[in-house]
Image (cartoon, rainbow, N blue to C red; front, top):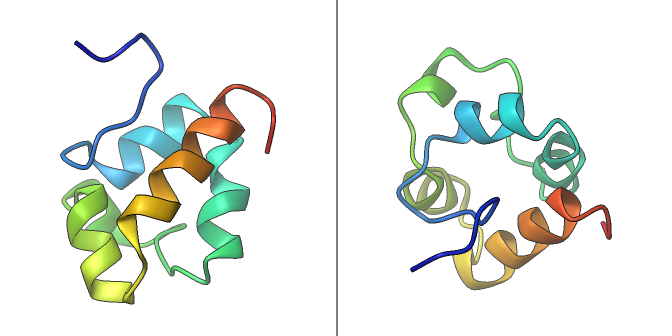
Length: 71
């Protein structure tokens, strides 16, 4: 079971950025165009990573670090 505040690949990108605003900086750092994108409300983390050719195994821990205030 994932701990509270943890991010999974099946979560919606928009939901993550709204719930944890610090993650917006991570999304921008990876040069993903999700910020303000209307598709962000429908794209999961996994789908966004595939669309932007981002390594999900690196991206999710960076998002989680931002949530914890370490990123």
